[in-house]
Amino acid sequence: MFIDRESELRLLEERLKNNKAEFVVLYGRRRIGKTALILELIRRNGGIYLLARETSETENLRRFSERVAEYFNDDILKKNPFQNWDAFFEYLNQKSRERLIVAIDEFPYLVKGNKSLPSILQEYWDLKLSKSKIFLIICGSSVGMMEDLLGYKSPIYGRRTAQLKLRPMDFFNARKFLPRYTLEDFLKAYGILGGNPAYLLEFDDRKSIEENLLNYFRNDSFLYQDALFILREELDEPRNYFAIMEAIAKGRSSLGEIMNETGLNRGIIGKYLSVLIDLDFIKREVPVTASWKSRKGRYYIKDPYFAFWFRYVQPNVDLIETGQSEMLVKLVMKDFEQYLGSVFEEVAKQFLIKLNKANRITFSFTKLGRWWYKSEEIDIVALNEREKKALFIEVKWKTLNKNEAKRVLKALKRKTKQVNLENWEKYYGVIAASIGQKNRLRDEGLLVWDLKDFEQFISP
Image (tube, helix red, strand yellow):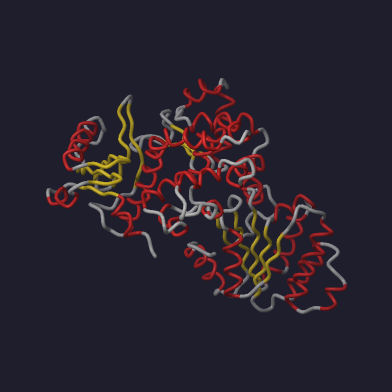
């Protein structure tokens, strides 16, 4: 199933049309859809897909020889496989007088088997391949290893002609995987699974959220096991990282709160947070009106899959391992609506960005984020600093009637008086799961949106 990734596919096909040597680095977390993207490119345009395995160099060369020989119908290569990487790249160079797509998936496995491989590739690229018509893609799932390969200390630094980091799908594109769900139920599923295609395919939208969670909370479940697999693949000392991510999942977002929750000192936490940010597991936010260097930073888990896993699964592993899935589902559902509040805030940001791109909002904003000061907080603030315009949004994961929506707006206006934006043009809005008499509120000049408005950005 190939869903979404149209923009990434379009970028690759535009480069393909150039008919000159291309060296594309494609990477992203495991099961994010990298292989599906590569295979779709090759299905449309032809080419060779080579999957590296965590095995010996000889075995990988033998398997690559088979695939290449099949593609070129080369009986001699079938009988005499490549003995080294020099022979492999020399063969590709000879075959690249015409346009040739070659994709090497899980490239880091090859580097583990031969540390000199990046140097060999660099030499062949500089002397020969860069003058050919090859369209070379190297791909990997270990974000840390791939970014090391892209770093200035790597032999292939500066050789790539394009770099593409695949990220989870947003709410609106992920929706295509579970079309039978109502939008409210899909938001619940998105809060559990995030935008990873492999995870979305694990849910059955003919079953309720609770029924799907029963399958999730099994000790043989892919959804249960995969978080551990990915984190252990990327992190050398999982124990302290796990403690930090579990603290953040509980809502301990400031450095001080994380220290108190984990018992770790500031220096250790700072080091681990930096690694988690680099690997795209967490993000650091400051008030939208503050400098990025502000000490008011808060930390959040980026991917709903990991946020859910660390909030509900990691602390309750014993229930899963002892077959008490039903008890865990009940525990989750008691707290689930509160958890979904933060998920809905992030989806509301995605919605506002889509409105902004479509020029269907009060003004074009250039900055978007939260604002807080002491005990006061505003869920979303959109700014245009050049025009000095600000939009303040309160997000509520609940149904509001007309009067409740007005009260929310009144309280929002009170809070915005503390935001230091004097002489700015200010607008106020509410985004909720559902808003009664929404059109009447709009007739009164109020900015209100709910889930029904999100549907305009979901393509069939």
